[in-house]
Image 1 (cartoon, rainbow, N blue to C red):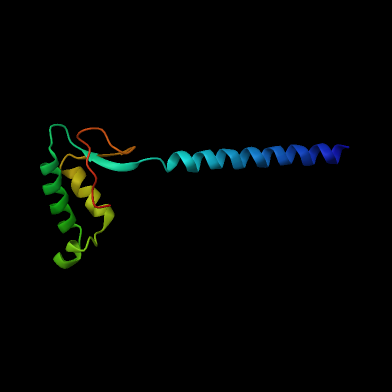
Image 2 (image 1 turned 90 degrees about the vertical axis):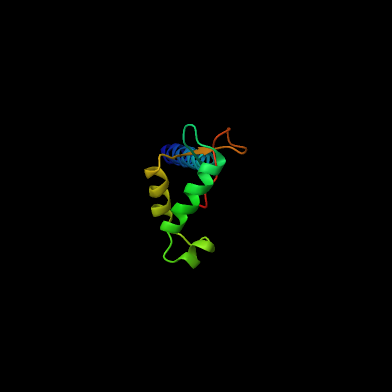
Length: 100
């Protein structure tokens, strides 16, 4: 009898763990990342994004093909005053999608 209770208790804990993990994975995958800076326009973002992609690429040719170092690209945009947040599609006004 005690063994049956222990098994049932362990099974409930495993089921709860799976449920918590599933919910975490589901919620962490919602939305995509966008960039914004107070008062900035889409053209401002395009210009800064293009410059940062160039700076974060090993060569100009690599930048044209989107081969960039993500951490360097993000650091460049942050240094220019941009902030990055996750949003559902479509994002709020003033939030723009980068090359990541």
